[in-house]
Length: 158
Image 1 (cartoon, rainbow, N blue to C red):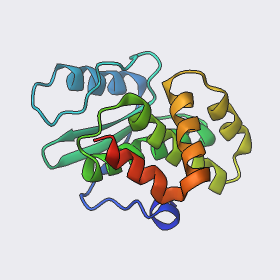
Image 2 (cartoon, rainbow, N blue to C red):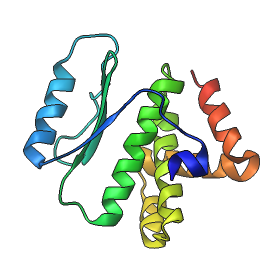
Image 3 (tube, rainbow, N blue to C red):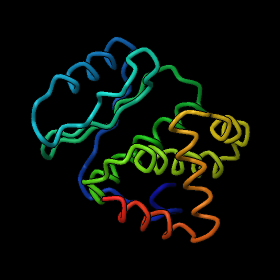
Image 4 (cartoon, rainbow, N blue to C red):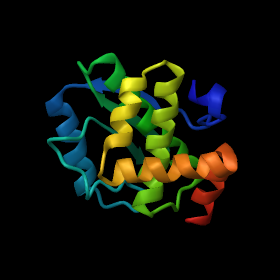
């Protein structure tokens, strides 16, 4: 859906792994202790609340999502992490948290809409943290400038 509807296609093979809570915690800890320059920045992640992560080590890329999530939440998390994978390929220097997370939430929001999951979209919009703030930023920008406007704003944030 993300590739067809939004045109965000990954060029580098990226695996998707469903992992249990403990395995996801191990991935997060491993990423936090990594020292290579191209590692995923996980410093701000809460090990208890994180449901998914996109990781990158050189050419190896992976999306990890906690198993057992309800369908709606799985779609939201998987789409969010897919967006981070796309960012990693196309906007590798993007550091600003509001833009970085807002873009990923916006992609997830669009996926939720595609599947008619309006209640999930409402919950996303109600969030008051960086994810909700970023989503509202991206949606306002999209309303004014379209999909390309959101992508270009991300490029300008590099």
